[in-house]
Length: 92
Image 1 (cartoon, rainbow, N blue to C red):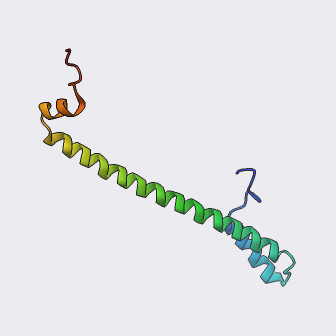
Image 2: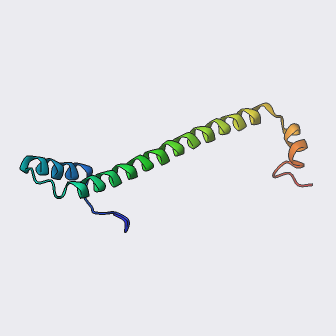
Image 3: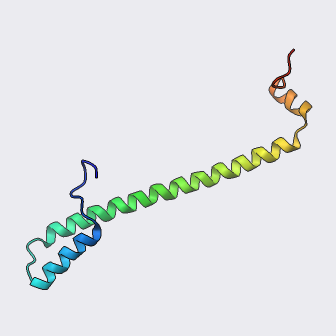
């Protein structure tokens, strides 16, 4: 729980409180519960978008790594020397 959290309650607990309001016909707490639920749902959606973006970046990273690996298998030692100027481990 961070300092920005309204409470440490879960969405299910908030919904249970909303059901209790409806059951007893005591709607005084309902506006606050709605705000708390909206806050939790917004945070959940934000987190899902972050995870989705991360997965997309990880997929791009993997395809780039495959491309580099494929390119390295095609190049000969001489091709690599001409590209980077020297072969690692070779003394000149």
